[in-house]
Image (cartoon, rainbow, N blue to C red):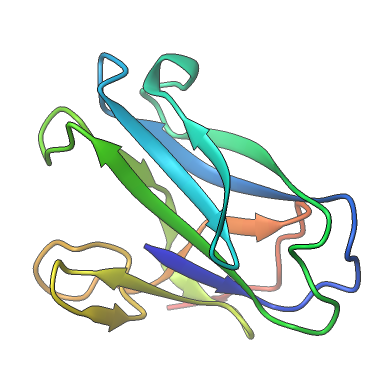
Length: 139
């Protein structure tokens, strides 16, 4: 999944907050997190809760350019499956100006979808830069 968030005025000391849960009982999978195409974190299930919770990840200085939208990618690597070895990013049935998402289905990107499951799961992922939650327009 890839989320796009509005530009930041800060180019240093940025961080991401996001809602996630790990559904893997062992470290056979890894959650890879990228910012503007660069790997910033790889999280293991053993360091996460199986319940939805907020995680925070530092964004290295130089990855965020003032005035430019920020692309945040989430991908699972390793022994991934959809029943016991996966990660789930939390979402909400709302939208906000400047925020968008897309999901990779295995052969193409689908805009404004929160899941690779059949049909569109509308809303936005709970992924924010520097802990700032924007005004939300609920469905």
